[in-house]
Length: 198
Picture 1 (cartoon, rainbow, N blue to C red):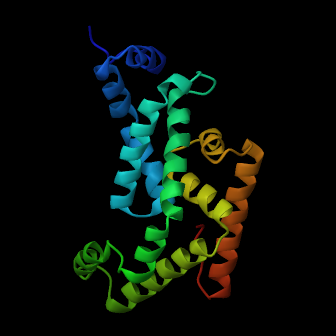
Picture 2: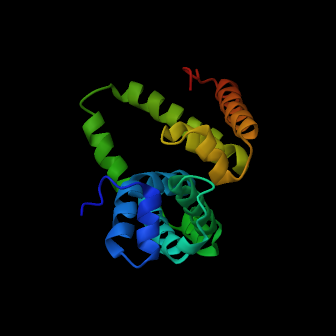
């Protein structure tokens, strides 16, 4: 019997009874959303992959605690967010961020080579300055504002799902996203950049 058309709740029930294919289907269905939540928290593809794997391991161990009060996806995203935040807080992550160069520098240099076909060096410099200013403005936000903004900007999650992940009421999440956007725009204006609706 195919499990592709089976609901998440039915798959959870089957997985609890020891059906590995049922849990595999849950992983396949939600892998992308879990990865993107981890990426929003960590900013590194490799670290997001690690956090996503940890999430599914933890979820499998905790299947018995899933009560269906939220959707399985929301429950899973909450685990993913907390796994990523725990990873972000680790001492090793702080040391790597301080000492080691960004993992994406090689990819960025390849992008820079491709971009040389397009805009002039002056235009590219202005764009790079703007992107750097945006990154700096986002990094300067408090963690609560930054996390809400990054999750909202990913376009992957509803405000309700973000609220569940961050364990905050819907109105609080909407305020945090709005306040984060306002602060980023204000900081860009202070540095002489046009926000362009960002």
